[in-house]
Image (cartoon, rainbow, N blue to C red; front, side, top):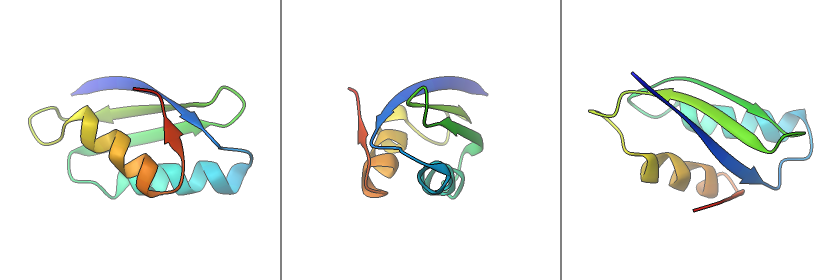
Length: 69
């Protein structure tokens, strides 16, 4: 398993955190996701053999948030 922190813009509340976490944990290969709107980050544990960081970032964007590339 690998771990990555992705900077996320646009999270302002617990509902935003839930949206980001749900978008990530639904993906095959993601074992855990924890976001913090105060810090503007998502901590993700994933299997790099199953999923790429680009896909993780795309899932966050598809949920309505911006990520740093």
